[in-house]
Image 1 (tube, one colour):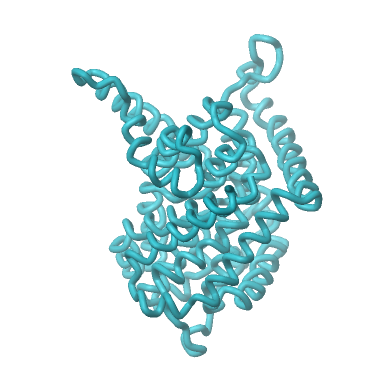
Image 2: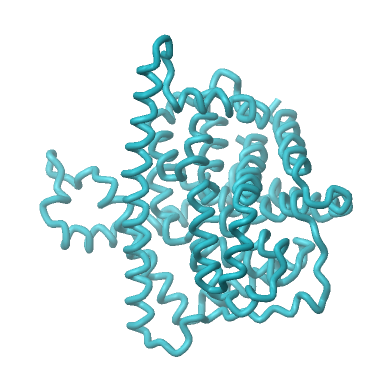
Length: 403
């Protein structure tokens, strides 16, 4: 049954992408690339979710991030002092301390990897490998690898020399990759709210899923002349070690504070909307309940049982209109209400930057590097969220086969 619902979910996702395709005939011609990329998604989903080797890798990554969170707690504890002590004498259960502030430490480590040229080497190597299977140019392959490790703002810095020369369709692909990925600096934060195996699986599957959706929704061919990539994979060249370290520490702090501000604003606004709906005579459901009913058919068609589809749809919609952290916090409160399959599918759906607020972040980041390119990104903002959300839907449908 899982396999049948998974196939239905995958085909339904393809149909939703094809409906808004910029070139439906060319999309059909990309079927070989789509099949290869989908096969890679299925293989990696099987390895990560159903094999001992996959579990070993995930356990190692989870232990590594847990260790980093422990080290981060030393720094947070020194600054926050008694605020870190709970009523029982243990560590206080404060989201800002335990989940957001550790982002600073992981960001600092990313800076060290950048300075030592380890991170650029990894990204360039993955980019070269991806060119063999994606059916796209090196620039799209390089950016796909970079998006998997860097934030949706930082990833465009290495492409600053290319941005002025890129047509709209290639900018769409690069932006979709940034929105469908997550930043390495916040992976540890995700792992405090979701099962690590689903976080890792989502990151890997979203990488290939973005190319699948783009081949359908935004198909194009790249000539050798167009693919002469002038990539600056070391934008921090010339800076000293402590300059780079300080920059990345401050970047991590900005991310932590930005997420905190968004959580305060979005959670409060949702609470207000929920209350407004309850004040309407005869209305006994909240704003989030309504969103759940709207997204309920989508959740069911990709494989989530009908009895759980309304709650799942509510979480999916919450992520779309707010951000993944808000949805994850809502999910952790009701996770036990779902079957294991639904837990897996919802978890992987939540792991990406696909939401409306990301339009402004990506467009603003690109605009800061090249004004004209930023304006182009802003014109396809809604289609960008649509495509990136379909990547999450496709990942959830694939995971549902093995959950």
